[in-house]
Length: 496
Image (cartoon, rainbow, N blue to C red; front, side, top):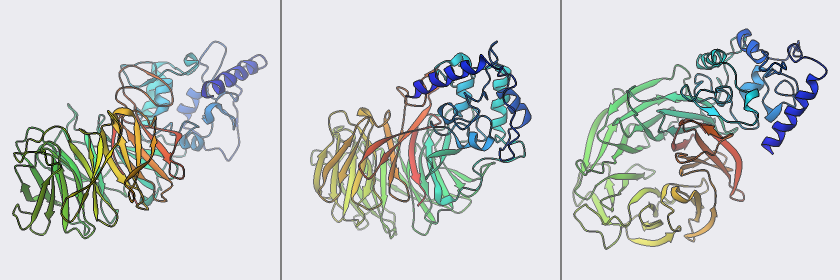
């Protein structure tokens, strides 16, 4: 249907050319229209072929019936996007879909290979003008900048691990508002892996799994983005938890070498500092964590060690009186090397905190344990080659969503019966992370999208565009929304 609309629009455009040159057919004095800056409006009205076809031809992108819903006459409508979602991301031209549509140089950035691309690609000089305009905020002629008054309670954060960005979505509309640059190195990838919002909803923290840092940002500020602090936190920081009072954070060090086998605690006030270290021989490559609502107990899973831990946070030391630790399976040895058969990756607590759910990417299952003694309750097989990663319990507590990376599915598990309610197929490419909108009506799935493409249009070149998908909770159906952003969407958290 998408390509059919393009063909119809193109045909109408050619029909219009038989009667009138498109070089001057866009003159609109409607006072309700928010205009582009003159240099941008001039590009959209510049003929792209000898036939005088322009971007703002009424039958193309110049009126209410614009092709794919993309209006290049009214700045506000262009900022709001098209049928395909966000087209212009203020302050980031490189990852804006509009740039990929007009760009034809794979060395410069993304190139979208859309139907009739010869009528969309423009000369490199004008491509640079458009990119620079977006990089500077994509302002209207009168200086407006899109998405500047979005409430913090309507924001979703998704780490873009292969592009050193954090995408900010408007949760209700599923539009990309901003892409926040993160990390401290320009010559190599720092890889934002996980994101955690503070209990007071004023800050968010990200782990840079390759650089070895945690960074703290202010949720409420806009460009220039307010990076409040950063702290070096050991090898491969992964999952982050923040105490209910917001004063302390915990981070797992997902170090596969086993040289650290550590969980670190840090204070969140600036300057952030490490205030405690928990170390254990069985804690090889810890990733998943879950903190009780009162903040008194921290649950941890070590992926290579294949052990579960329950730590008393008041003392945060390794002793028999403050720590409960159990192998994820009786076959696991106590030497911290594990078996390689289970590989527990992520953990979450049931809403009543009586059960601990563990995604095991080695055994393709969800394992469920009692939180009082870490004894096994149930094993839920997800299917061969499912490779489950991040998991999350729905707002009402009734369902556990599991992102199955290797078969592009999401499993929905009833948290009461501990059975699979639904398996949603084709949920993007390599689903990694999941969270639910504040109203509980939708699940947003961050998909790695590293081995293929699932966006608005096919791309050429090596630039990997990241895509997140949306599931409707009322019937567990996959929606058409394809939310494009930076490369490798991974960790996700919705402000609630």
